[in-house]
Length: 217
Image (cartoon, rainbow, N blue to C red; front, top):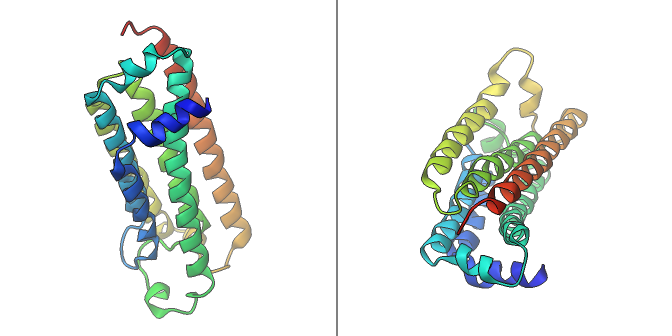
């Protein structure tokens, strides 16, 4: 498994997948929908799938002396690696905003979503949607990805819109807490996002393995 993962990192991956991790620092931007940074990270991963298709990477991987399930596992490990790298960068930015920059006026008067634990939970939810809709959708055919990616775009921006709008509804202002306010609620929302990410990724992986086994390459 280590070898197939290294193959994904060194041969199959587009350089854009690594460069687009930097969009995680969009969590620093005030007055901007910060969850768009999550979408750009997934756009970088999409470039790796596009490159892999053009290079017949899936066929090459399937011809290796490994199980077809391991081909799927290698792709998922790569996707999750990029997502978690970006997530940890987002988490670092969030901690800085919640501590060192907690007194900054430009953040305190931010009409849009603050960088807090709820935002991190939403980021994990969007990553989970990407894994379920796009990565899982790709392995239905192992070469068509336009429809699942467009479907994911719609779902992602609906989630972004919901996250941005949530604190404007009566009684939901605490989800946009600044600094360490409502910390218990913030941790609960982060845990919910993490659970959704794990569940959606696990469902997608299981479905992808089953679909890929039935594909005649």
